[in-house]
Length: 349
Image (cartoon, rainbow, N blue to C red; front, side, top):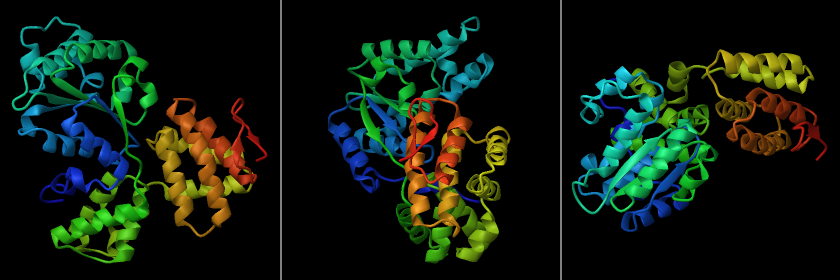
């Protein structure tokens, strides 16, 4: 795709965030700076919402917003961290420093610098669910030491992974997955700004295929516009095709419905082990595929959503992904609407 990515070119302003509760809580943080935990599924706009906040809160947001993706530390070697231009100034002459000390130093130095304008700056820690508990303790101390001049925004899809002392120091901002209609509304706005022709069926195909992942929907719409010159059902299908592993997910649903749970489990194993999904992502994809097909009626879909809500709580807590997904399918196929909280086996509603 040529030109800037639409997710960057059309990043929302604070007053354009469509989720009222999240927007109002962020607006409150403009005049009353506070630490925040921005929580929600991947791709729903947590980082974009934080950037929107800082563009209103700071006169020089490029200088007073410091973004640190946790993967920048925990997924990289010490050499890679030292050579990162964002961090090398903090780590010069410290080649013998242990990795945990490097991370602590970057956090402390980032928080200690005076803001370029105003009374405080913002440090965004993205994908914070990956921070180990010992590093979270260090983060807690930095937050306590610099609370007067630094606002911390912790973006995560699993707030339960944060230690209690950090959660207690932060105001929660929940960003949910957008509905298909909300996603279509965003895509319409972007297409109008870009002068891209579209029709309702094309936008609905793109939005439904994204399954609540707004980032994915916007990038898919841009790819379709670049390849097909417009966004219609035919151009979207030709560009995106059968998105992801829809056939495999449909097969797992059908096997579960037929009582072939061994085959359903095998398919789920393949998707989790080889398809690159985690449990929450595969749960969202399963709901999307079930909604998009014509095989299941309203009662079936309603029960599947009820069970998915229960399974999602277990997945967020980091329990065994495949076990809960298989139990979800078995309870759904049996016409049940609850999972036993102790053994997680299906029981009659």
